[in-house]
Image 1: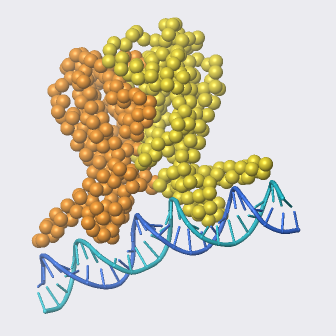
Image 2: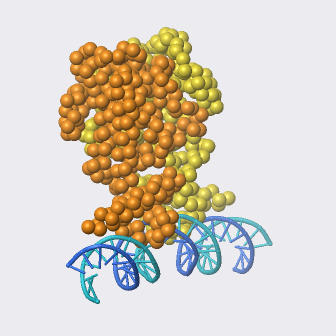
Length: 253
Length: 253
DNA sequence: TCACTGTTGTTAGAAGTTCTAACACAAGTT
DNA sequence: AACTTGTGTTAGAACTTCTAACAACAGTGA
């Protein structure tokens, strides 16, 4: 079985090609990813790379897949490292991990959550990887408190997580049903809809700041996105939560 | 002076070219905008269009400029139409106008606020147009209530806008200073930092939902982004505002 | 050792892109 | 009528993606 040797070389070649592709992505954006240029940088002629990737879209598929998994690994690591901490601190840990990953490689964040490619449809397994990121978030939201009405241990240290609330009034029924269906379709049926909603809304808020930051929209405004991000994170944690209320941060820097 | 006749024809040609470019943008994304293809659709050879646009980037510049102005027109119209209404309803009017514009032409929204082009830097006047959109938002936030501590007329009808709050604790100093500097640099020095912060945070939250919606991220999840958007809008208005609290909507549909 | 098979590389080429250069023509001005 | 200006054309350079045909190599079986 020499196939395994060959397979290894083949894998290494693909890894190197993807590494160079990421450099191109960072320098010139998605449109700047050129198979020929990658080949040239590898000291090989253009068509040779087509032995490894069916085409440019196939290469992009791999990049997207890798990025989703990488992001999920990052936030899962952050969440794991915060095991045993207060729920507020665990939310902070997730948010910090999420942001760190994003700003460390803005182009990859935008590859996942920015402008979608024309006719590109993410394959099934990348969608699962995306779910992993959301699951890591849901994991640090205090489900117990919600279900039982009792705050989880330590929740009172910095401020109660705003998930213990009286029943919501109306109109949420549709959304709740959708959330339950969504969670059910991925084997997470035990999470109550209120937590799913908290996770989804929290995610969109973090993304709102992050996506503008990685797109460089705050640069010309002279505003530090880190402060804005922290304000949003704290508003997820504290019950205060209007858009202009306390942006004070008593948590770790 | 026949120059005016020529100038008119020239302008019409540019308008038509941009119209076709928007079609291409919608169909194939930014990368799909091809000067040659535009020319072909206009019944003209490729290089002819280079009399009108120095290059593809020049054409894109025009598209971005137009889009910013168009968006500003839309939200300003929505805000104007709500004149005299409750502040909460005016916020709803802005949010609805913002979303309508975005989902009616997702590609243009992404052109402005999605993944930025490689080396593209928006010219000065487009930045001014972007400010117009934010100004329309700030205009419906109840500045008076904040400054005086008294709710503006009608604010109590649906729920107080969450801008009347005790002084914030700490750490906001840096952000406040940046906000003031930002507002000052564009002749809006009279708006208090708390309102600026409310506007900025509100904008990022709306954008958080909208950007994911126009990118089609909610599609595979089976979740209706309109409901999520309304939830965020109402949380801007009501003081409740944690991420999982009331998503009930008492405002107009 | 020899031939066979599969993988990987090469060059050649088609079809497309952006963009420049040189030329042709029409309209308005002097 | 001659001249200037704006606009269109074709030709071509330098890219791109991607296919096709061919060459060279590895490891396997006889």
